[in-house]
Length: 416
Ligand SMILES: Cc1cc2nc3c(=O)[nH]c(=O)nc-3n(C[C@H](O)[C@H](O)[C@H](O)COP(=O)(O)OP(=O)(O)OC[C@H]3O[C@@H](n4cnc5c(N)ncnc54)[C@H](O)[C@@H]3O)c2cc1C
Image (cartoon, rainbow, N blue to C red; front, side, top):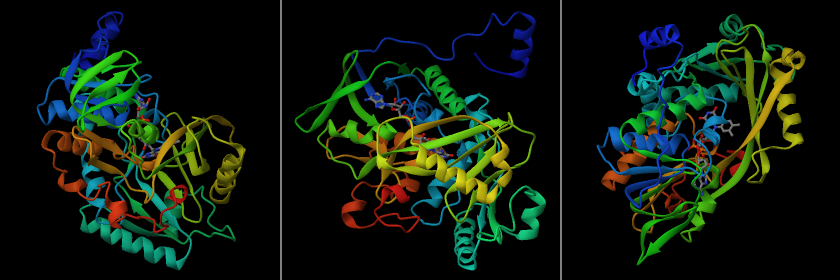
C-alpha cells in the first residue's frame, strides 16, 4: 500500500478500514542468502538497501524483541554532519544527504526536520577549534557558519548568556542538522524492506553462531537453526555478547546513556543546542517537550536504565545554560545500552570468520548514521569491499594504531 495525502483522506471518509499492516509477520525459512542479526535502525536499513539498492533477495532480519525497542527508539533523535576528521566527515555527510531524501525514498513520514544545530563555545580556544571543524566540514561539502553572541541571542533568547562561569561567546551553526522521529525510522525501513521481500522476524533472539571450518553457516535462534550464506551482525549495545559467540573479543564496552523529556511547553528552542562547557544538549519536540541528555553512566552495564548521579550531573549542566528548564516538570526518562568503541568511532567490517560481518561501535551517535550505515554495510555484504566513505571503519585500526579519535581523548570509551 502506498501512503499519500489522498489515502489519508479516503480512509478518513471510510472509517479507516482499508489500512493493511505495515509489514508481515512471517515464520523463519530454513535458509537465507543474508541473515541480519538485530532489528534496530542499522539492521533494518541494511536489509532495505540490500534489497533495494543492491538488488539482493532471500534476506531476513532477526530481532530478539520488537522492531524499534532498542536504541533506535530510545535516542534523542539528532542528525548532523559536523565532524572534523577525514575518516568521519564524508561518511556522516553521505548519511545526511540520505536523510534529506529518505521520506520520499521509502514513502514514510519520518518527520525529518532540519531545524539546525548550534554548538556553543565559551572560550577563545574553543572558538578556534570550532573554526577548524567548520572549515573541515565545508571542505567535505557540509554547511557550517560561525555565529557571534548577538546573532545567537536573536535566535535563542532563552539561553543564559551571562553565566559568570561559562559565558556564551558564540557558536558553530550547522543549519542542515536537526531531528527525525526515531521510531518512525525503524518503521519506515521495516515497511520498505518488507515490501521488497525481506522477512522481518521479531521475538527471535540469536543464541549462537554456527561456524564450520572457519565459515559461518547460520545462526542458532530461539526459533531454531537458520542457515545463511552471509550473516551481518548489527546489535548495537549487545555487540560484545553477540561476537563472543564467534570467539571474538571486541574493542567495545557497553554503557548506559540516559535521556529526558519535560512536559510540553510553548516553543522556546528553534533548533538543537549543545553546551560547550560540559556535556549537555537539548531540543524541543514537535509536541513541545524539551528533549535533553548528557553524559554516559560511567560504568559498564546492559541494563536499559540509568542511575541518579548522572541525572544530577545532566540537570546541573542544564541549569548552567538554560536556567528556566529548572521550572519545567520532567515527564519521562529512560536509558539505552551504548556500544562504546575505544576511539568513539564505529566499525563496519568483515571478520576473520568467513561469511560473518560486523557493524557496531556506534557509541551514542549512531542514529544519525543509520542510512549510511545500512547502505555501507549492504555494500560490504554484497561486494566484500568497503564503501568508499567507510574505508576507515576497519576493526584492525585498533591494532594498527590508526584510531579515529574525533574527540582526542584517547582510548577511554566513557569520555567519547
Ligand atoms: C538516550 C540515547 C540518546 C541518543 N541520542 C542520539 C542522537 O541524538 N543522535 C544519534 O545519532 N544517536 C543517538 N543515540 C545513539 C543511537 O541511538 C544508537 O547508536 C543507534 O540507534 C544504534 O543502532 P541501532 O539503531 O541499530 O540499535 P538498536 O535499535 O539498539 O538495534 C539493535 C537491535 O539488536 C537487537 N538484538 C540484540 N541482541 C540480539 C540477539 N542476540 N538476537 C537478535 N537481536 C538482538 C536488539 O534487541 C535491538 O533491537 C542515542 C542513544 C541513546 C540510548
